[in-house]
Amino acid sequence: MCGRYVRFTPLRQLLPQFGVRPERIDDKLPGGYNIAPGQNILVVREDTEQGRTYGLLRWGLIPSWAKDPAIGHRMINARAEGVADKPAFRAAFRSRRCLVPADGFYEWAKKGNQRQPYYFQRRDRGSLAFAGLWERWHGNGGVVESCTIITTSANATLRSIHERMPVILAPEDYDLWLAPTQPPALLEQLLRPAPDDLLEAYPVSSQVNRPTSQGPGLIAPEEAPPELPF
Image 1 (tube, rainbow, N blue to C red):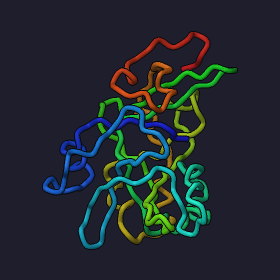
Image 2 (cartoon, rainbow, N blue to C red):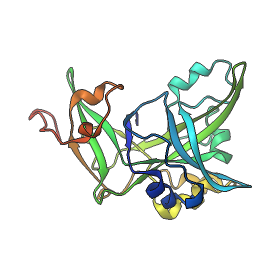
Image 3 (cartoon, one colour):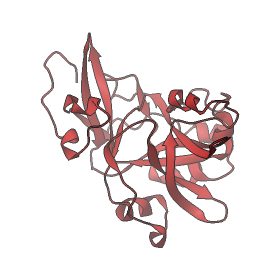
Image 4 (cartoon, rainbow, N blue to C red):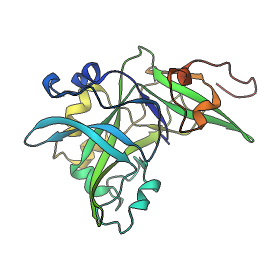
């Protein structure tokens, strides 16, 4: 799964990589070193009139047909396998896809009662783009726009830590993913593990286990306990 991630690159440096025009960028939207489900997160999407845009959406997709928005707590991730057909995600997969920019993400290795967090980032320290879906839900309290991050099977870098990883799209696939109408079969081809040589990982402090923890110290390397794999 993908349950925590990091985004610290300033928006004026980050968003042009995703096709957002510089004059449209307001650098005041906050990032974080421990972004968690339920928070409003940065996404990039395509608007038929305005072109490439960005904004904040609640992390935890609420299907348009849901009676209770609390269902979003269980929809932070969408498994790539069958996402095109599952009732909660199929409408968004057809026409409401987005990119979730990130600098890295966390995953936990488990052994018995121990959980050791690891931080994953690009080897070249570049930005990442997770494949996402978004929805618009109408309720008594107004309109809520929410999103989910698609996951797939882990590549060799993650496999000893966790069986799943976020779908990380290559820059040359951004336009295809965001295009309003594309054949589902073509889009499903993008939902694959990242190349084995894209990412590197190292253990970090267990302080990241608390969603309230923040700061660059969370991604500082920490020596791994010898009994945990990597």
